[in-house]
Image 1 (cartoon, rainbow over the protein chains, first blue to last red):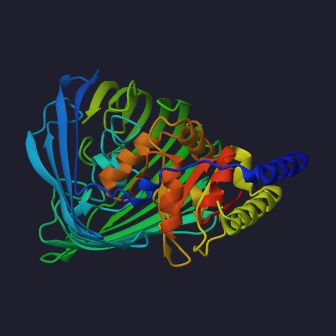
Image 2 (cartoon, one colour; image 1 turned 180 degrees about the vertical axis):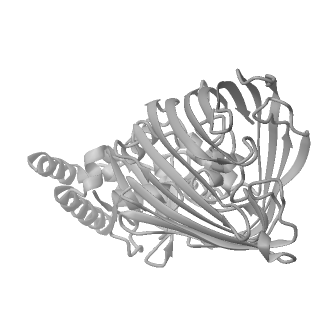
Length: 340
Length: 150
């Protein structure tokens, strides 16, 4: 208080002097606006191997993504994303190399509380799925629920979403109506299925996040192929970014068929802004890689960003499959990604 | 400078001296958060300020908000971001995720705190920051200091 009064006195005493001069010509400058076109891309190299009998190692460029955004008019944007994909399955044998139109939509943003999208976009569900790209997730291998696509990553249709902030919290919400374009879990795809779903989550004081996603897929030709999914998730940040705890739990019910359950919990310790350690416990019904048997994975990932554009991850995981006979094996991988 | 100009300058200076004594909380961090005097917003919580600079809060009291930031590498910007997000928060990674999800957009970047004052004065929804020791510059612009509550 004394310092402030002294400072105030000095200011009053100095009023006879001219203060800081600002170049008046700068006032006529227009406020800079966002670019009309935005281009973003990234590519990665993956090495993946395991000691599971009958597997092969994989090492190759696995993904190249190209995004283009175009600002049509105030509030209106068009977006397209193309991916080159060349990923291994759990046995290391290569998947079919594909070039995919990952996303393409028109968006109208009235405010952060009201956004509308029409086209192909990411399914808003949980924490992992909206940020599922290799350059943004904390690990190399996705959780079992994501590998199986129990809630498909992509939807084609209409989405309404938004964010509302209070003085100390934030709520995010999304509703969508779409066609299903991906498999849901096992290899029986849902042809001509329609989906309705939504997601809502709340973060309080930047420390606790909890959310719920509900999705229903109805096969128009065959009701027995209808699927309902519930995803519950939590995230805790008790140490201002130093330690992050997260879990997601999925329950899938199939009318006339077997359901599926999957869960993961993780701890992420931030060593520096560009280095972290991530431990994840993963357990679930694995239809794509283990014939529907329960699979458990304990994995540890170390990540390092040498520069803002270059990212490196090292990962090792111990897998156990509750098959007959039981299987257990180690899987390890290194990943390097470059953003351009 | 005429007598009326001197009187006007003196009155503005005394008003700001009065504000110095009252001490809005943002001054304790080495910077001042400012907005236009025409704005109805008088205070923000630190959470709201963070949400504004993360592009997740773009409207308050019906006013569209536009945050302004200094150029990358500016010591004041580094200090402001450390206060707001903490030392471990990877802001580059955050904006990468936002670009991929097509959600929030980064604050508008301007070349100097003087430009921040100029833009903020002319636009009620603009919010910016300047060094605490430049409080004397406020006398020349119709801007006010926002109170930041924890």
